Amino acid sequence: MKKLAACFFLLVMVLGRAAPALAAGFALPEDVQVTAAAAYIVNLDTGLVVYEQDADTARSVASLTKLMTALLLMENVPDLEGTYITAERQLFVPPITNADSSTADIQPGESVRAIDMLYAMMLPSANEAAEAVGFYLSGGNLDNFYAMMNARAAELGCTNTHFASTNGLIDMDEGNYSTAHDLALIAQACWQFDIFRTVCGTRLYWMPFTEHSKHNHAEYPEQNPDAAYYIQSSNRMMDPGASVYRSYIKGIKTGSTYAAGRNFVSAAVNDAGESFIGVVLGCPWDAAEDGYALSFHDTANLYDWIFDSFTVQPSLDTSQPINEVKVEYSSETDTLALYPADDLKTILPNDGDYRLEYVFDVPESVAAPVAAGDVIGTVTLVLQGETLGTVDLLAGTDVERNLALYAFGRAADFLGSLYFRVVLVLTALFILGYALIAFALHRRAARRRR
Image (cartoon, rainbow, N blue to C red; front, top):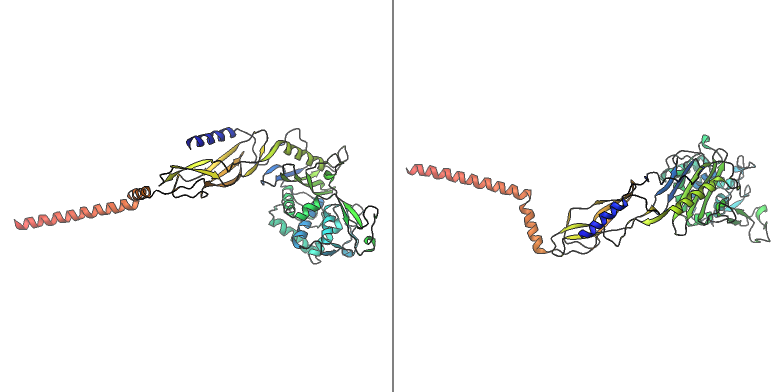
């Protein structure tokens, strides 16, 4: 056991080399270019932030607002395929009807399934769909829906977000804003839904027939005679023909206005199954030389760097003991090996240049009997100054109690206890007092005899 402890502490010293701090994610190399005014990328497997830049500053977020509208739709409509939402005629007013407003060709008065509204919001970023969903969920009062949006944002831990729109067609000066960090929280809540992941990963979706005269027949019968028309995703990072295509991108949502710039919330899952949510906000409006938005280029640059440089790894080995503790009242062993209860996955640089520290909280000793799996203490892992988490330390084996050692130990404990010392002092005082009284009585009796 002494050799084990020595090897472990040597490992801690080796891993304890000086390295950049992780308090705000890893530092971006000089050769990785990012134009975004704000960015935030978090690993979903560990909850660790890999990169952030001005992530808590409020900004106009344009159609990324629809993430909250989509979340409330999924949370409040359990039957998305069997529920119909009518796009009320009164909702078709500017700016929804402006020429530059993105839509899914949902017509005034048309009743559409909730699932199709979700596809419409997430793929072509349909403003009329978001407005219809908000109107439906609020019972016809959009102010109530904004209150729902803001209450849900607060529940998710958003600290600098306020919604005053279902779709993001108004900007920060009118009360609709969020941050890169807060949008990542909202996106993570959406990502918990299987249907959301399916919708976001779809490039082209065929809208079904409705009773509306424009959509009660197939617009492209040669391609699909069983659907009215199709809508497409604005996420060009899922287009294999695009220069910004990345196979690891699985969603999620674009959002752009002149005031907000080019924005993109992404979900990425690499070949190893490592999952990330990323947000870039305030990228320049003009496209890159290849014609694709700089928000896509920024996202590609960040993820390419992350996947090339870091790996999700276990920071603890649950099959190996990492500490030991003294055992009392046992004749089998005087020490007990402690094993971590969890491997506590974390993000580690592939080049090994990091500082990983172990902070133990274990008692000086434990009393037998001990059962394998008993929680004896904890270990807290700190990666480059950032606490990763705390894991229980478990007893590796059963340890039986030796009754003779226990009896002797308890007796020794009693003899060394404060209670025993007090009793001993009181007994001594009693004996001394008794002796003095007896001596005094003896002398008095002697004097009488004389």
